[in-house]
Length: 187
Image (tube, rainbow, N blue to C red; front, top):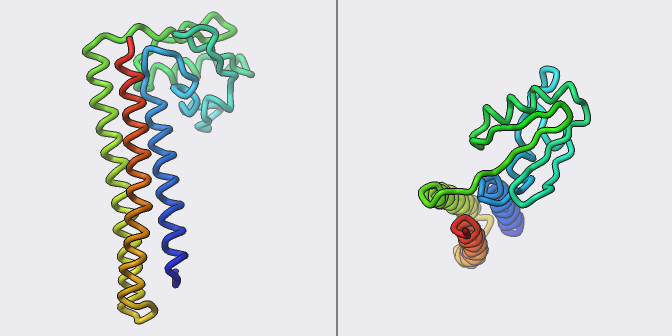
């Protein structure tokens, strides 16, 4: 990477990917409401290969607290059921031979608070990831300055742009966290 624009563009891309990863992790945290995102990327051992559940079955939400999983290959019902039981979802699948129903129980107040703590940890991990991306970009900029490819003024201006980019992403992380926390505490 030999240009300021290249460094800033790469940092921007990495920060957006970190935001998306955080968004996916937050969707996977169970609230009292059914959401296909809870099971979409659950890995199922399908004929010796780990495959995301959304590639093996149709996932629908017929009611606010029920997830319906209808596999395209009925022989995979048992392996899907095992994957759900092994997951950290804490849900018991009901298999009727054609579909699997996951009924989400109402969350207790203690469980809600525990999930909020999990959300806060994931948010902090996301912030750390963003700060690490910023740090790496600053190191690249300083290396370019040391190699006399750019001036100290260019480094300073680029660091300002990088900080603004980081701040924008941090605001989005906070917004995602507030939204998820409100969703969890909703009765």
